Length: 410
Length: 104
Image 1: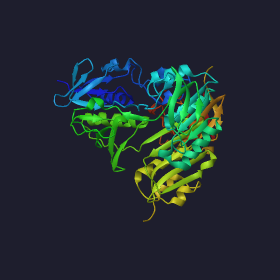
Image 2 (image 1 turned 60 degrees about the vertical axis):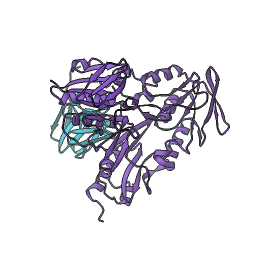
Image 3 (image 1 turned 120 degrees about the vertical axis):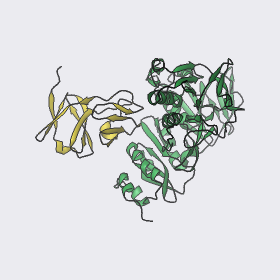
Image 4 (image 1 turned 90 degrees about the vertical axis):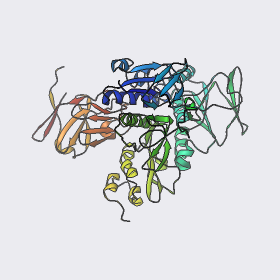
């Protein structure tokens, strides 16, 4: 009998795995199960071009809706998996039906963190994760209206930019000193604050929401610092949490997402995870990392599929993502949590720079503002784990590609 | 309108490994020099309109649009890596003496 592959999560990671399995597999039976009703789609446009009404939803689809049937992939969209039972090799659906598997991929992604602030249940307060969330926000977009954006991580920053571009009055609030402070630090974060200010966003930093006020519908955001921000609606972007509740009782180890090794495999043989939900061991950085970005969803989804087929591939991508805000292109590559030097090519206040997060002479990560080529060229340096000459790294006259060719003597 | 080869640029004006954008009859065309072989293609990335001459990085006959990572095969225009899904249009190239002609 053909091996049965089941993928839960009709996400970008899940869909990419399904595509890879259908291209590289032979006899396997493949089922793709997803809680959302739509065929798999990409989320980056939801905070940018799609939110602004510039591109149709179809353009965000990973593949045309008919693709899956054409490839012989059984789909169950709008279907939630409630339980995984490794002992009988079955997943259980909310209607109690059971779907057997020989190999399973968990690509359930995440959901928005619940907002535990008084008044959070008022109308006119939105999170953004799904296309339906984006549609609800789009209904609120009218030039001249006032929005408060809570949280200036990537989603909050992109939403603030998109809504400014649509002519709304935007006030953004974040508990840190700058946008993206936790990831990028104060110096880089300040350049992003400057970018938003230059486009007319009003910002409130180092303050948090105390209560959402309104009668039925939100009309004012009151901060702990005592500010009263009158508004027509609110978008909250305070991060996601991995969607793992169906793993309760399964014996599959969960710790900040589904724990997997460098082959995308969990502690249960034949059960894999990929995408936002997967806390994966990264051999280059020698630690576990969970990444909530497009590139990881694609690359890890494909890697997990190949491991399901028995190819034993090691997943060691240098993580990378972009965030377009206004006409600025922000990109990040690598992984860092701390750094002892921030080495900058160009000037942070110039609107075009590459900033490298360096520890012990090695570049762990880099962020570029309007430095797309530099980001591409710094990735091999990050992957090499070699110490680089920081003066040359800083020197705009030196081609980054030459730093890899001539490593530091040590 | 029938296509024809149009004199576009002197080959020597494009360094090996470089991409230059030129206007050919109102079309913005990128020309890449891959080890002495020239490839012509639409300068505009099919994903989100970045200029491939400005943001493109060459590796053999593959160009990566560094804005968002899309990759195209310069010989055919085929998408080799997303997020682009639509191929980039490629144009036939003729080198005659010190003149590079592109068919548009």
